[in-house]
Image (cartoon, rainbow, N blue to C red; front, top):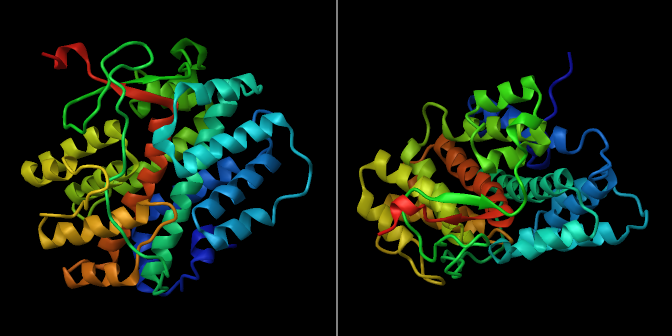
Length: 367
């Protein structure tokens, strides 16, 4: 019987008998559905986003993220077929999402639509770019855990974020990070629930996605959303290893680097509730753009914040010394894997939230 394919294990040169391989086996769901997401994205051809375009764009995104081996993997699938204006619009969108996701605006969705992109194709495109952003950081982290040094210079600072007072629809926008519960409005219409089949509605309901504009938007490509959801659960909801509060902290740190106020609000709130250390979490949220994220934190959290933040910039700049500092704080290989997978996943999550819509302050929260 043949062994299941595990692309990242192959690209990271992970010895099947190593401690890292054992940790990834313990996180089997995350490992399986990361690969499953890849297989859905690069499986059957699709007129909305042709397979050759997917490989070409994935190679370019991996290159922007400095993931040399990942770029080479995708590039070997690319032929030299000429691309049209629709592809060019997709390429411009890929550059924005890869390098400057916080700069995304409704006009960028409109540019795609003007170039002939259908809603399902736009969702698949955004997922592709965000997934390769996740995949590249996970590969970087796995190679660090495998003992390979990065030659990049680490710098862990907060990124910029939106400062417009109103959303596209005229609701009150957010101009600062908060632990309040926020709403989120899409710039591309979510698929109405009654347009899904009964089986598809059951899948949405099972995962709690039926009433969410965000998830019904992503459900325009439902098989990919399902694999993504299972990857998320495999990373954040598994027993043992890194405490859940610190997985949520990692998500918050990435959101500070990328300027994603909505994601930070959700995961900072969870980190506060689970850690019982609201002051430390709020201190992280209050860090100004360009300022050091780990300042004033406990040694354990400072070391973790530093690694997560440098893994989250483009290209990633995390180092073996940061990994060793965490080991010195008592982190096991499984806990380090949890840190890296939590951080990498939010390279994916933030890019979707920032580029397909925006947060707003619900009326009941004002005053």
